[in-house]
Length: 330
Image: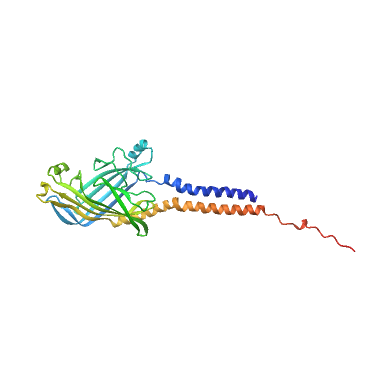
């Protein structure tokens, strides 16, 4: 009976020992993915910013500029692309809406971002765009891959429509969460005017006729939770200028916007809580269960060996097996 039990335990030990690496290296890469129907929004603020008054074409100090960013999963579009792409695809329809202190629109830039649900690599398909202009992204945008590494990545800048390195700068603690800090600098670059202008009747085409151009630079900062690849916090030191042309009345340049953009406090708290809960799920697949199954397999193997050794031990003699000594007579 002991030997049969030891064989069963040995089979279970082999099963759990084999399941451990399969869960980590086979199941996790296939199960971990960004849901196609995800919706998220974020509010960022630039306090004491500089903003262009299009009525006077002069820059002025304002108490606050607000940027509302939304990302909405387009399930119908993702399913359509998956039929030809042959892999799980996520389509995010995004909008970056900027408003001044009076609540009026400064700019709004729609965007469609198409990427692999597992690796976050861009997937090039019809509809990929920024502000209505077709683009072909290279590198990341919005989210890092699961199990982010301590290295530089390529990151797509939607304003300049270019990809540039975003550099790993070290590991930090952000409100109780271990994060990787990344930083990217986009030098002064000529960029297109938004399709939606803040003044009625003014279009990018009419501004272009004056010879005035728009230039932009930023220092982009992200604090990324490495297991989920989700940024828990982000900042930008953002500057825009209008240069040359008759629109500026002979001036060489004027500041269109300058400010230190930061996430609003309530959205920081919400993001940190959400990332912490998702981090637990990733740890379950990459650490807790694989190591747990491996330890369980070792325990079952030890118990199997113990029972096998007990089954092979010779039985102790019973009192009936002993022979009585014969009496010795003279």
